[in-house]
Image (cartoon, rainbow, N blue to C red):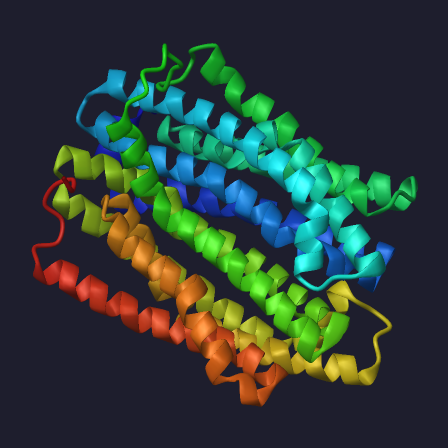
Length: 448
């Protein structure tokens, strides 16, 4: 099914089932691998290795965030151009974006490899913890030029109507990396570097599979002779900045949180924070599937000038995001002990008590998280990057940093309360932005 038949003519409810559900399943498969990764490292290599990957992971994600900046940032104008019937411009943006991702991946990967020991020392890590985190980060950095395009290729496949292929590719990547990691860690008894190697190899193999039909010219988007221009690059950066700022700001906040937690509670506190981040890494992809998987459809209809259809699609996005978030809150409130035991076993009673308290407080985050996520996704798809960037930056960096200072007297409890308080403030901000957007005319045409 081509983009016009899928995005312009398919009934909104059917489109949601065809796009959002496969997107959610594919993202969930990816998230489950990340969950398995944390479980394997924690159970097989121990708490020091588990804490090390949580110290290194923010830098890994920042690297992927740059690729996501270009991937998401190019997907919006590509979809808009296709909606306008300008396939030549869409192909040029696609080609230039792929080259940009490979180039930035090589540059940032080299910087991370060289700076890894300094970055870990800057966070306050010492001895074995610093060595393990450095080794883990450096393996990811070596594969960066190729592995970083994996998430952008997922966007491009969905634009071309290959939604099921995108889903199955994510499932295959998760299964492949899980098998590789189990083999390297459990069967061959390798160290923490093998966990990063398994993930990187899985991504590289799936990048080659994803890009093969594009290279053969079998999909709607095709490689062409690239024609870079400053306006095009500015548009890509503007449209991708909300996701990028959210990813980078969240990682900067994670780095700050880890530094604070090392001071307040040591390695145990960092491990508990890691559990919370793995849980969030399971919920966020489901929200992504509910909202961001339909961004190409929203952007396409923006280019086609179909205002009613956009709102019809968004009703499903908001509803699904609310259901996912509320279910996550219920599960976390009901089973905090089981969640803790997934990652770390044989811990003392004091650790378990703190971990369960942290999980229960963290569960409150999802009472409001769905709303700001859905509004941010909508603003991004409608080429309103400033509004989306304000939500993402406030949610990922501004509110958490302010609340660290305000809640500091509460110690570790203040850190755990930071998450639901941030989510509530972000929800209020998103409500103001959405109401203002609607009162000013809502959806009329692509922003100038």
